[in-house]
Amino acid sequence: MSGTKAHKDHLARLNARSDLPEKLQALHHALQARHPFVDRMALALYDAKTQSLRTFLHSSHGDSPLLNYEARLLDAPSLLAILEDGHPRIINDLAVLDAGLP
Image (tube, rainbow, N blue to C red; front, side, top):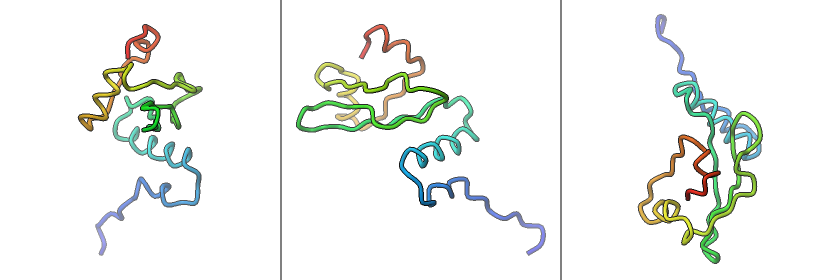
């Protein structure tokens, strides 16, 4: 088949033997190839017993601005809305967290 381009799997690194932080970084790089404005990706764990979210993994350029961050859902209405509505939380400026906004 001359003239056809071979498909390049931009997510192939996800199939490699690697740990979860490396897989998140691979996903982040693949996303940035199309959307360079995505500066950071993060995962949080939900503990149903304490009804809280805790930062788990991040992919960013440098240290995590939310290292060991934990919040009870009842104290953060925007986080509770994620659980209830199933929509992701997108923060365009992490400085709002310094201002104490949930």
